[in-house]
Image (tube, rainbow, N blue to C red; front, top):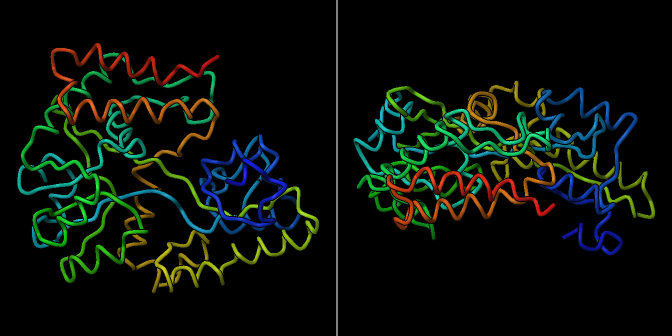
Length: 326
C-alpha cells in the first residue's frame, strides 16, 4: 500500500476515498489547489466533492461513485416487489453478504443507528446500541433463518444467479458484466429496498463514497504528476472507463448524456448514491468498526446470536465498535 512506504510508491495512483485519512496521515496524499481543485468542485456533485475533502481541502480527483445496490431477476420480482426486502424473501431466494462489514451496517442505519453522527464527527462515536439496534438484531436473526435468505459468501450469490436458484443479490458495478451475462433479458438493477421493522418500512442505506486519483507529495515532478492525475480523472478518461469496463462516471456533464443517464446500471448506482446511502465515514476511529461488524454478522449466521441474547450481543457489538484503543 502507498501509505506503508510513500517514498517508494507511485507518483500518481487510484484510491478509494475511505483511505483518505490514512493516506494523509502517512504523508502519501497531496492537497490539490488552484485550477485542479476548482475543476473538481465544478464537475462533481457536492457529495462527491465532500468525499475527497478533509477540513475544506481537496485531496483527490474523483472518477466514479463507489457504492453497492441490488441486482435482480425481472422475471421473478416486479418493480413493486423490489421496494421491500421482506416482500422479496417471501417470494424467492435473495442473497445478501451479511458477514461482510461493508454491507452489514445498512440494516442498522435503516433504523436510526449512526456512525460518527454525520460520518465526520469522530468524537460522537458509533451508536449501534439501545432499542433501535436490538430491533435490527432481532430482525436479522429472523431474516437469516428464512429459507429464502442466502448469506452471499464464497461466490454463492453469483453462482445462484447463474443457475437460477437465486433471484437477487447485492453488489456493485464491478459485477455488472457477470450479472448481465447471467440474467440476460431479465437483468434488473435498482437502489436499495426497505425492510420492515415493528410494522414500519425502514430504508436500507449503503456505505457510499468515491474512487479518485491521488498525487504522492513525495514525487519529484509535482506539476507533471498533478497534470497526469487531472487527465486520469477527466471526462475523457471517465468516458473510456465507462465504455470499456462499465465504470459509472461521476462527472456531471457526462451524466447528462442520454446514452449514460438512461443506462440501468448508472440509474441504479446513482439512485443508490443519492437516495439510499450514507457517506462512508473515513475518520480514524472507523477502523475498529470492521471486525466488530463482521463478528456480529458471523454470529447471526451461525446461530450464536439469538433472540434470547440479542440485547446483550448488540450492546457488546456497540462497545467493540467504540473501542479505539485510546
